[in-house]
Length: 345
Image (cartoon, rainbow, N blue to C red):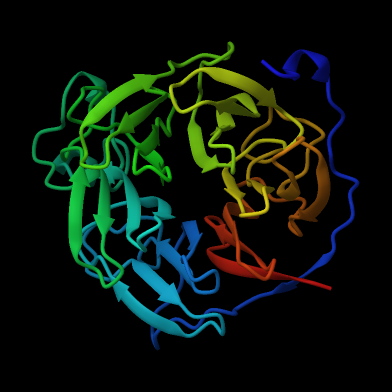
């Protein structure tokens, strides 16, 4: 690895300038519709419009027929929506070079989920050994054309740690050559990265649950820099791990706090969202929730947008993060719900 050993025990990167001001309620939802929990936000290939996947005005889309994939223009106006009735727990989103939209679904609709063994639409115990009977959707990754046509589905409904299934897929990323990377394991029971060819054939997997080098605990976010390095938000271990595209570990960064979301722009600026430190994550004392901004080239942290809700005990601040071509930052929020826009002062 490049410099992980030199990092030692880090002091929290909390006392950094915040050059942004917050704009709330920027995105205009259809009349009568409210924001649900939102962890998925992405920039279109035009560099201006915004894609979001939200959880049907709640924290689950079980029994909902609302379209959950939304595209907004730069002024916050809704341009299109689709994906109704196709998801239970939309979690991660990615727009590839052709403008196709990929979304992960981290739960299923098996009857035992609806009846209470793990909450509505949430995978219960024992699903690692095989798919859950009765599931017709969930634990999958769906690829759509920009106008909402379903082009590909990775995984089968039900969830399991088998080649044909996912178990709680968190995020998806498409490399410039078309290879597809998926991170899975939201509850920590299964923590790995899967690599697929552009036509959906599994190439390889790597990672297992643990805290050692290359091991993972809730690999919650994916991003790729201009060098083709894969950044994995290893949230349960309070670190980013950086791999090459074959799964070889290159580096470990802890200076960006507990990563729920990662975004790297075309200039290799990196944006990392921490939605859990000192609230849900009691094992990360001293670190504040918020969005840390720095360089993917050298790992420096240069700015910090803090969570205004310092005393909350739940998930707060941005869980997903993105930045447009003008440098505006967008934070998708699960606890407060919705998407905030941050603009330079």
